[in-house]
Structure formats: C-alpha cells, structure tokens
Image 1 (tube, rainbow, N blue to C red):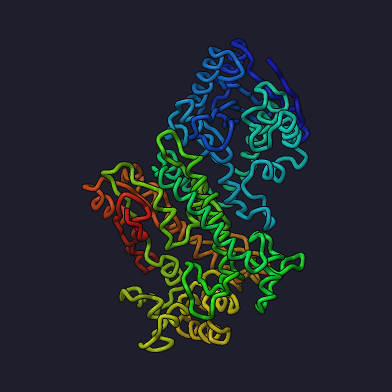
Image 2 (spheres, rainbow, N blue to C red; image 1 turned 45 degrees about the horizontal axis):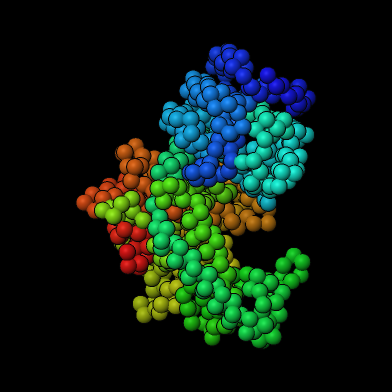
Length: 622
C-alpha cells in the first residue's frame, strides 16, 4: 500500500492508495469499522462532461478527518481484473456506508450512478452536500467578500487557511506532459503521487468542512433549508441525467450560418475602421469619431463599450427590438450582432455539438443553488441566458421522439406578484385579483386610458427597475426615454404603489440600522453590501420567486412527473410528452406549479404546447 502523509490544521493525516487485493481487504475493514460515522467521498475523472463516450472515472476517494483511501478504478493504467475488483469494492462501500458528505454532490453522484451503477435515489438520501451548507451560511461569491461554493476556498476559510493544496504543482505535471489544467486530468499517470495526494486531501478537507458547516448551519436554524435544497438538487440531477435530444444536422447548419453572420457584421464594423469587434479601444475611438458621446469608463479609465452601452446607441432593447428613440448607430449595431453571433456559435451551437452523447442528447448541468439569491443556473450550455424571444438556438432542442412534443409552463409575472404579496400593496393586489395586465394597468393609472405602447414599456421598465435596483439613468438607457421622463415615471409609480415603497424602505432601514442582511420568507439569510442596501428588495423578491419554483419542482416530483421534465429556466419549466398525452401532462404540471394563495396573492401559470422543438414555442416552424 502506498501511504502519503500531509499536515492539515496541525494534524498529521494519511492518504492510503489501494494497489492490490490485500489493500482492498484493508479498505473493506476500514469501511466496516465506520459504524455510524459520516464519510466523505469524491471522484477524479477525465473531464466534466460525464456523458461523452470518452469520459472515464479514474479515482474514487473515501475519507474521515485523518485518513483518506484512494481507489484507482480507471481501466486504463492498471490490470483489467484489478480495476473491476476495485470498482466493485467502491460500489459496495457507496451502498453500505450509512452517511456521506460530498462537496457538490450532483456531479459525483451522477458519476457513480452512471459508471459504478450505484442507485441515485438511495445514495442521495444518505448524503449531506457541504456546498449547500456553505451557500446557506454565506451565499456571497469571492468577488463580494464571500468564499463561494468551491471546496478549497471553504476549507481555507473554515478548516485550515494553510492546508496543503497540490493543485499548482499538479498543473505543472500536466504541463510537463503537454497538457493544460483543463485537459491534464485525462492523461496524468494514474499512479502519480502528486495526483493521488491531491485526490486524498480533498476528502479529508471535505470531512472536516462537514463538521464545521453542519454545526454552523444547525446553529443558525438552516437544517430544514438544507434538506429542502438537497431534494431540489436531486430533481435537477434527474433532469440533467435524462437530458434533451438535439438536432445535429440543424446545429451544423446553424454553426455555419452564425460564422457567416459574424463575418458579415464584422465586415460592417471594418468599414468604420474597427478591425476587431473585440477591441474596445478601437470601438470607442470609432464611436467618438462618429460624434457619439461616451461617459462610462472602466477601472483603468478606458471608455466602456459593452452591451449596456452599445444597445441604446443601436436603438435596441434587451430583446433586440427597436426602441424608436433614435437613429441606430450602424457601428454599435454591427459590433453587437457580430459578437452575439460568435458567442452563440461557440457557447451554444458548438457546445451542443461537441457535448452531446452517443444518442444525440445533451445533459445541461443545472446548478439548483446559485447566485447570492439562490437563483438557479444552467451550464453546458447556459440556456437560461438566451433572449426571451429568440428561437434559433431553441430550435435545435427536440422532443424525445418524432411522436412527442415540447411544452412549457411559466409563472405569470411571478416577481411582480411576489412583491405585491410581500408588501401587501392593496392597489397591485387588487389589480392581480381582477386579472389586469399589470404594466398596462400601471400605465393607465399614470397616463390615463389612452396610454401608448411606449408609456406601457416605460412603466414596465420602472416596475422591474424597482425589483432589480435600476436607477433613472439605467432605465433611460434601456427604454430610450429622456431621464426627466423616467424620473417622472418613477415618482408616479411610487405614488400609485405606496405599499411597495414602504416595504422597500422598511427593508433598507432594517439593514441600515441593524444587520446588513435580509431574511426571506423561507428563512434564507442574504447578506447585503453596505453600498448597495437598495438591493434588499431585489434579493428578497428574486430569492422568493426562486423558492416558489423550487417548491413546485418538489410537488411535480412527488406526483411522479419528473420523467417528463427537462429544464427549469427562470420561472418556466420545460417538459416533453407524447402528442396524445401532452395536454394532460401540461395541465397537471400547470396545476401543481400554481399557488392559490401566496400571502393572499394567487401565483398563476400559463401552459403552452408546442411542436417537436423548443423553438416552436418561440416562433420556429417546427
């Protein structure tokens, strides 16, 4: 047996590496002696896309506070019969140990489910995810003064700031064999001591992190939330495991089309002296030369030319529609469209082509607990970032067969309904109960019954600005309305919905004179930044709306509908079913998602049944 010593928090710890049958006997004895203790487990793999045909799990690690066991399970790099014995022993341990702790359980649980045939539901009920506990105790990312959800950062914060981390040296080993820190995991020698030490330390740190965070979460009353988040993560893991069928032929054509589109718009930009749309200094210099006024700067003092700056110059809103506030600047539009085409090609189309499995299915990773507010996030590809009215990317995602269709259930203005409920604003609540179009109703109260579309759009912008913290200048840029008109609209909005104003002020004042945090109805504690106390309302509303969706996912799972679910996107759930069953499934999904009374306000849903592609719900022909 290979034993590798290290020092963690002043303690000598040992990483044991299984090399032969006798070592497996020793590992089994250790498992038998565990009793009721919680054990940490982890995996090392060839990459992050566990659905690719070339994906392999290389190591499986188990550990307590002082001892780690590293079991090489890769069929490459060792005798095939030995590999099978090790894999069987790992699977046995995963089925036998009564309690596990894992950091980011979704990935590792899906790995052992797929590659070691360990039952997902059974394992999940015995796991505590320290990433969930870390988020509950402090949901801030490193950029905001928190630790984020990474194991090493949290171990440095809660366990040992000087704990050994062989990662940098390991990346050097990758480089020495001609690979990067992304690709080296598949090619590093299975028996490389640095690789084995790295793997073993993770479970020792994870086990120690569990002790600290489980106690902290329990002391702060988060035990119920932790169980809730674990169950939500399981539903999302099952959706990720099922995945979604894609159309490779369509994707290939779209990739070529987007490449051409990016080149054409880059050609337009070149006519104005911009040889690279990704060169901010070139873009800003050309815009200034055209007479545009730029005011926002980066920390380095350069003019900003990001989407928030360029879109108003191109007279485009967030949905890429004309605002009608000015003549579009052709360079600003060319830069935006060239960059969008390139991004879509790389981040969506090529990502789906390269990441699909042998059955032409993609398996987007659904981070069920993300952002400070816990809002969900999707990667591989980031489908929640698609513009709300765009169908070209969505057209590539298909129902499970040609006799099935795709449908969606979406909450009706859920964040506006949540703020109405939490603030107990009588005017907005009555409008909701009367079935009114909230944004149109607001425009009517401010401008009269003959309000225009632009006035409705302005009041819609003000309403969401109240939720997201957008000021007059930001709203003016987004809507194309003069700042004075926006300020007037904000004052009128506050006059109409006084309950919302009082609620927002109450949240900010509590944070100003008390703890710099807000507490959501579910008991989630969200820290506030001292300079951004105005974000209090946004945090509560966005987090609560997210919890509404998460609770709905659990109801759908309990009703046995998870097999039809494919993706949660913001306030929408995507599902697929046979043509004959789609209406019935959709109605049941809609019924279970809806909430009759959320603090006196109904949270209604809209059901839409499409065709064979997701894009059919957004205007695509198929």
